[in-house]
Length: 133
Image (cartoon, rainbow, N blue to C red; front, side, top):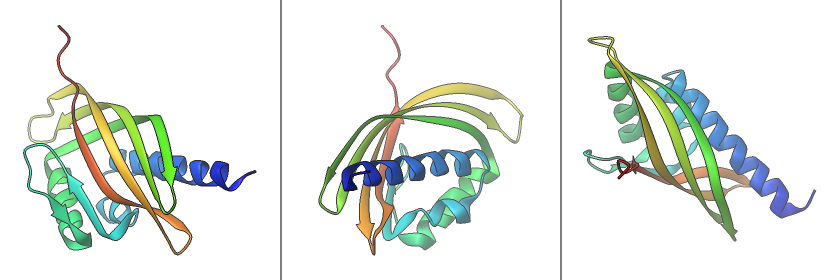
């Protein structure tokens, strides 16, 4: 296996683990996938930077919602110690207070950084797909 293939496989594995940990509502395990200065930019939320803010963000979200997420990779571009991963996701969301649920589709962009030989999420941003016309 070439280094490029090994890197692509490692990145795909992190995205799969991210999806699984979102579905388990496991904030601490999610944060471990990020670099130390990792950033999350979610719609209608402030930018979260670093492990403390990321943990607080995920902990808060998981007190309100449960998600079953499937993330599909559309593209991986690797350049040196950085990789850009464009994805789309299908998420079944349940509001814990009312048990009401809905389905949404998102566009997602991960920026990975290889630190100490390991790929971690350096930046993550997502938004909802526009409604069909």
